[in-house]
Image 1 (tube, rainbow, N blue to C red):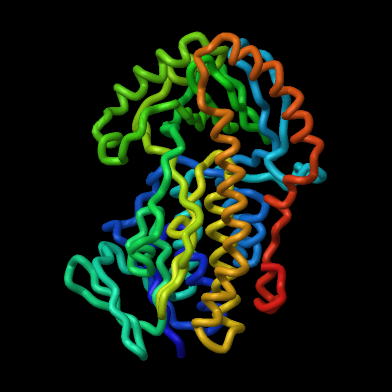
Image 2 (image 1 turned 90 degrees about the vertical axis):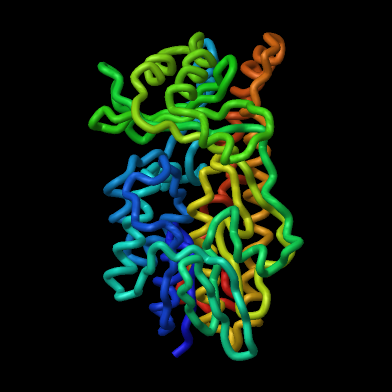
Length: 401
C-alpha cells in the first residue's frame, strides 16, 4: 500500500488525505500547530465550486449548517447609495452561491472527517527539512521526529517550506498594497442580512460585513498600506487597529461606524499577498498544493475552493496515473492555468479596493461602478469561476480537472 505524508491540516491537506484514503492509500497528516484552534483565523467564503468538492466527501451540509449562505453581494458608495448587487455564484443560478463560514469551522469539519476515517494527525510537527532517496521520502521535524513515505504532499501555506524544497528559486509572494483586517461584533438593532454580504467603498477604506440571524456581525476592512511584513503587523494591538479603522470609516454610512464602535475581541491584521507563476509544483517524490503554489487574495472568495479543487485533482491523478511523476505532471498541467487565472481575477478586484483620496476620483468611481456591477450581474463570463466541477468518479486523464 502506498503511503503519503501530508504537511498541513488546514484545507487542502485534510481534503487530499480523505480522497487518497478513499483510493486505498495509507496517509498521515503532520501539522505545525500544537493543537487545533476552533477560533483560529477569521472567516472565508466557500464558493459553489468548493462546495461541490465537499459534496463528493459528504461534507457539504456539515459546513453549510455552520455558515451564512451568501449568494448575493450588495455594493454601496461612501455616501450610502446602493451601487448595485452582484452574485456570489453563477450569474444564471445565483442561489448556488457561496457560504461564508468561520475558518475554524471549515477546519473542524475536515478534521473530524479525517478522524472518522481513522487517518492520523500529528500536531506540533513543524517541518524542518525533506530528504529523498530512490525509494522513499523522509520528513524531518523540529522536535526531532522523522517520518517516511512514498510521497510527501505540502499543503503548508503561502510560506511553504515544501515549495522551497521543490525549487529554492521559486518566486516569493507579492504584496497587493492592501492590509486585511477583520473581526466580529454585536450591534444593537442591526438587522440580519440573510443571503447577502454588504460591501462599502468607503472614503478612505474598503469595508464588508454580514449579520447572522443571531445578531453576530462578521466584518472586514481592506486598507491601503505601505509594504510591510507579517511580523510587524503582529505587533499592532487590536485597540490600535480599531482606533485607526474608526478614524478611516468615521464618515462612512450606517452601519459601518457602528460596527467598528461595537467591535471587540481579537482583530486580525495581515498583508494581502498572492503568489502566481510558480514554475515547479513538484520535484521527485514531493508535490505542493493550495496556497503553497498559487496563493490568492481573499477578494475573489476562492482561496479555500481552489485548495479543495487541488485536493481532488491531485488525488485523482495519483489514483489513475501509473507513476507519481506522471501524476504530478498531469496535476500541474490541469490546475495551473485555472489557478493563475483566478489569481489574476483577484488582482483586478484589488485595484478597485485601493483607495484614492481624490474627490474627483471617488466621484468617477461611484459613477462608473453601477455600470460595471450591472454588467457583472448579467454577464455569464465569470461563471467559469463557479461552475468548475471536478467529479471524483471520472478518470483524471482526459477528465474535466
